[in-house]
Amino acid sequence: MEKLHFEFPGRHAPGHFTPVLVGVVGSGNLEVMLEPHRGPTCTIDITTSACGFGPIWEAVVHDFQARHRLAGIAVSINDMGATPAVVSLRLDQAAAALPPGLQAISGAPT
Image (tube, rainbow, N blue to C red; front, side, top):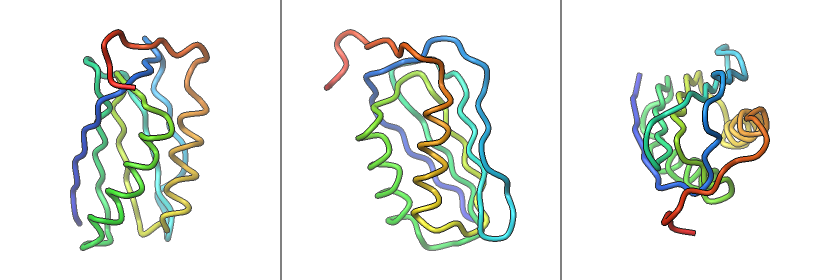
């Protein structure tokens, strides 16, 4: 098992919300959980059975954050060998389940 941690500045905060869970940990799949997080950042913690793919994970989560620019969110990913395309799909699916009306954070980078 490998554990990775990323933290990105964000621009759009959902405010208070019920945690969001998508996907199922299983052969070749993963689960993604979004939870409220204090602060203007988006943290992403990954536990994966596929070791040595840190640069690929970094590229996938960087792309996700570049598209959504989320703030005030902690993302937890439990992976059993999902492909980058499946990871992106699950992240987008989780972001789509957030409440509407994301609020812009003042002074956050655009």
